[in-house]
View 1 (cartoon, rainbow, N blue to C red):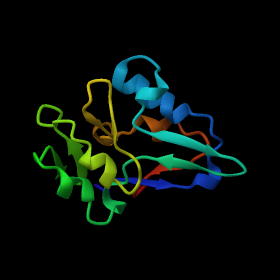
View 2: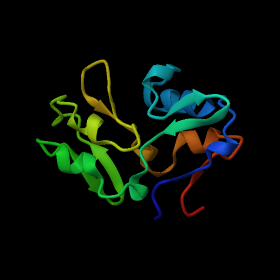
View 3: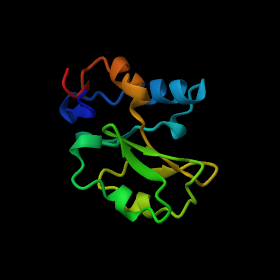
View 4: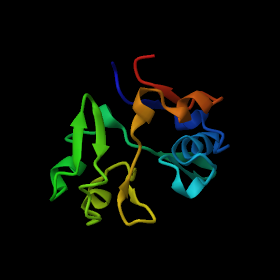
Length: 134
């Protein structure tokens, strides 16, 4: 399975449907601040789309900097073990895509590809997000 996202920021309309779908999938309700994808408005430039790029992230530095080995590549998905995470924020600083942030519990939070069927991609009507290999 090809893992990751093809992102075309030129197609993004900044509707934030992807952020809504993500938070709904992960929380059961819509809370944009808890989405694992972030749309940064930069008008008149195309928006910044911050999401873990999995297989398009050279060296996956978040894995290397985690002092407690809470982050690992499992079958192409870079996942955070929240039971192991100590909240040191080293991964936040190391992420070249600004895709890792701290949640309300001071634990690292990032996209986990929804187990293979990312809600954000399904909801993106402009096709700015596409599942890699599709």
